[in-house]
Figure 1: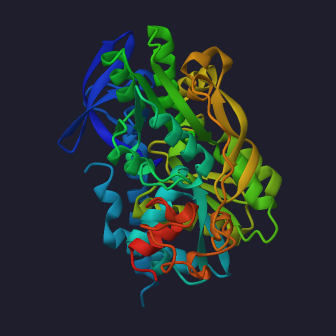
Figure 2 (figure 1 turned 180 degrees about the vertical axis):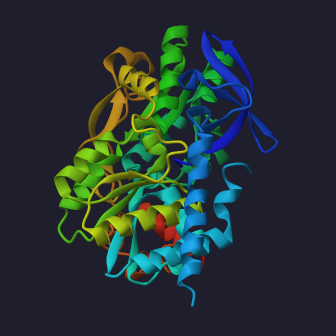
Length: 81
Length: 361
């Protein structure tokens, strides 16, 4: 229920003085309220829950777990006799 | 799908599971707070790839599950009125109240509609000024901004035929209540990732400070969950208790301040009853007096119904991590997703329903 899904902003516009936009979720386009992620730009990813964008996806932070995993793998290899 | 598929990679999951096995030298019990996390854990078998010394307890974070029966009955009473269009998220429609569920009411001719967003319900109200459009505003802090936005816009645009039936709940008071409960087994929490996109991590600092229990803000995909478990186990083994953020790609320490301001403008904190658990002080939100014209509980006179839960159901203890679905004699027998006896079976994010769906019987 609290699940939110990342999608790519494809369009932004104002409606009744509120920032709205179209967000693409792997081919499915939805009307989303962007008012509270006001600095999100077309092409960027936002996290959307029930038609409301909660936050922007930080690409640098998103990559960190894979950097940590690369280190883990090296550690794992070192431990293999 | 970008930012989803790569977090389901099997080889990476294996590397994380091995790291957890290398780290865990003692027995630990962690609770994942969110129903969405429980669903992923059971679906992907996360609890089976980590060492048996690390036990996952399933938390209370399924808003559909914890919505009290009285509120379902109120929804039923409002939706049955002539002239009402009753809108809800789809997963609330099958939850049985003492007069049946909303789906069967719809089958009997009531205008009950599933919407994707409260903002879609507001649009319906604008399109049908002759009808009363009521939205069933349930959820945690994650859903509060969207519900608040719908009420805020309705008030500003003067959409007088739009109201909310509010049953909003808050996570931190429930976590404190779990830690204080007799028989508590929780030694660390995997914190609610999407709630924290709005609220940030500060409220959780206070819980860590008071109870000395690690809280790792965690996402919902397999790698997110394994990373959260690894960080929590590492803290426990090192004797630390801190708030750590394992979901920083969407959670900022300060959350979403402007969304929070909107929520504070529309809602105020109140006591709320949680299904299976009872009343928890200051654990919910209700509309402020300024929004009374959009408050379904004020607009429709609703009698207070006495409801009773099945005496067999142990969902209250499951929601607090004291029991597991298999500890219940009714699980999978008298109690199934088609005939749920209580909170943890009524939604696919409830622990009992997830166990049932993925063959843990």
